[in-house]
Image (cartoon, rainbow over all chains, first blue to last red; front, side, top):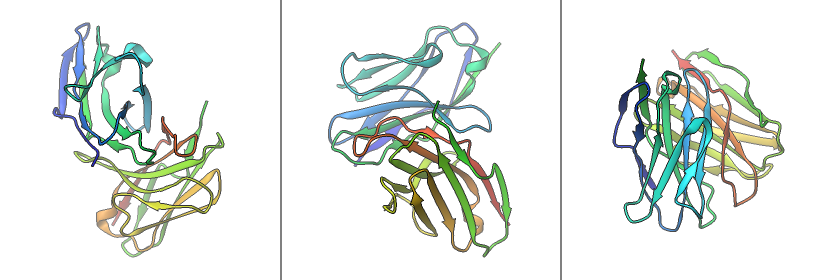
Length: 114
Length: 114
């Protein structure tokens, strides 16, 4: 069965510092991996995805994520955090066997302090 | 840009009422989804549809039904609302048949059942 774990409920970082939001996954086949962001009172917005190819994926707003097959991880990173990055971040996974279901993690709230 | 709209941002209903949540997408996407979002639980899939008049149960379909009479519209129905259905409801759509990838989300409907 597919599953996604976001081990941290909350991440606090100072503006200008690098940030990491962690995600680990479990799927039966090869994974399709996604990060979404939710700003207050808004729906989810797509940030980036890994389907195949280069393990380092670049996405919107300066975010990137690294696919690590041996550690089954897909951590979200940004070299220099902004206060405006404060939001709720969701990792999601789908296997590549043709199913429709995408499984979402519980979410990690990121606070960036000025 | 893909636009997914939901009929209401906020709804207050009484226990036992029948509730309709409507979702419309304007990008001719085949796949549409209904999720509920609860703190600490992330997004949980209620129902999805990969074609007109087609529907499949997600992880938590109990107490809900759906309707997809037209490609652009996917309705979620709470047959008899209960207080444990108080939640944020998110609609999403995605292109392609079985190769759906990125999902595009509406702004959400926050439902309070009294």
